[in-house]
Image (cartoon, rainbow, N blue to C red; front, side):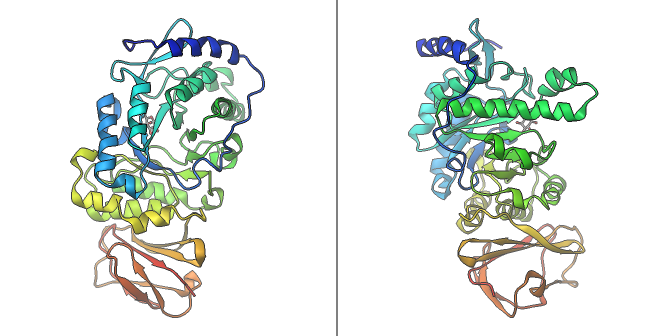
Length: 408
Ligand code: GLA
């Protein structure tokens, strides 16, 4: 990778500063405690699911423009996150430079900020990222300070080569020690970010290994991936939904389970699948990071991503993640308790072949509800009253999402 053209004096000054701070023992206290960062699940857009390794500075600026132009910003999408493949090489002082696709990171960050948005970046604890670009091993403090200098607001930190570089090298036959090394590496970057004094959302990406929901909040993680990578197909999306059961108690303001970024509008997902995917991410209090091509978004996809009622479920300030109340064959019922005593109920047809001649009958009693319940269908926008044993017809992979303001 060719280095970016210009080296700013400020970065050089930063390099000498970091040469000493890299070895400093006690990090300064973070000025913003983790619960101030990401009090609700982060919302924004990330480059990976659509652009992958092809992403450029121009694409990021274009995404920022589109987030504003499409009304996504007004709907709550704030972070514009650059994923893997922005990285160039380190210079003699160890300062990492962006590659030729990203000529000036500070200018890019300024541009994104000028739109009233925030900017995210990507690295990992190993020597290399998953796409084989330079990562932060042995340069954690230096990189964190560089991000802060650029004005970065969000870091996704991806395990990748740390497995080979450190885990299997240092502890070839000791899985527990490997996991300890992994946790240490995340802790190290967590401290480095804190010591910058800049509030930076810290997103752990290690595919849910060794129950990150148990230790990530303690090392300053604001979100942690709970599974492997999402793909733009129903099998992958449902597989991930299924793996979230049991994790709700670990989520709350400032610390969220991350079932991975959105594929809404990508691949061959049907509108029903896009709706269900988005609804379930909202039920799961998941980060809502769109991953589609915003310049060529269809009106239907835009309507899904900007559905304020569904976004309000995701962003509910109580921060209680939804849970699967029960499953009946291929239909699942999930509930989420919301602030003010409200409740969201999702009825999801996960199967491919339940026909309307066999409608599903919703048991309100199983949800602890008694008698008819008044609410709003968040996809039609209509008021609805659901009664116990209500027959519900859902197309394959479609969802009914209802908010009851005063369930009883
Ligand atoms: C891993 C992550 C993805 C993406 C790629 C980039 O696979 O899980 O989300 O960041 O790396 O290389």
